[in-house]
Image (cartoon, rainbow, N blue to C red; front, top):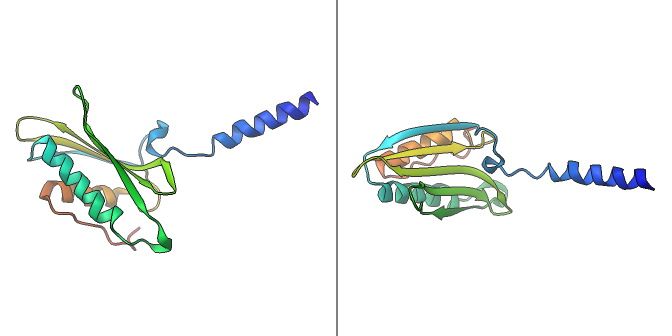
Length: 144
């Protein structure tokens, strides 16, 4: 009986490790880039939010996949942040965009993606171009 209980406990622990937390798991991101933006931190944060809204939240994806985001304003020196996740998997963060003030009219932005499927270097480059130019540039859906 004791062996059966230990086996069940071991199986439960093994299964709990299967639920991925994406970028929040503490592992290194699949792709990431930090770059400068010629805009204050609030404008850079708005540009990141607009990119996510246009290119992920309002876009029709195959198989009815829906993406959502969570935005937070940094307090006490922390960066502003936008997190992207699949509607059915809110704990698995697929993309994180942070904006930190670098001066009165410049910001430092970091884009991190999971590194699986469409969350790759091409996504990082689309986000970078969108935030630097203040115009959302979505990558093609069929690009992998």
